[in-house]
View (cartoon, rainbow, N blue to C red):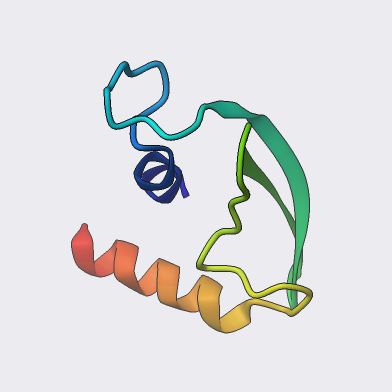
Length: 77
């Protein structure tokens, strides 16, 4: 999520850049329901515009997304 927000904002957290489009504005907590329970996610917020993580689908259980993230993390080490 951090990399996606960095790309969308044009600069990283506490980074100065002429390419910056907007600024970070804290986090919002969102529960993520899975078959094994609920996971609490801190999703970065932007001052202007909006951001929704690509690994989540709005209002759906994200079993497949969680599985693919774990698989990718394992492959990448």
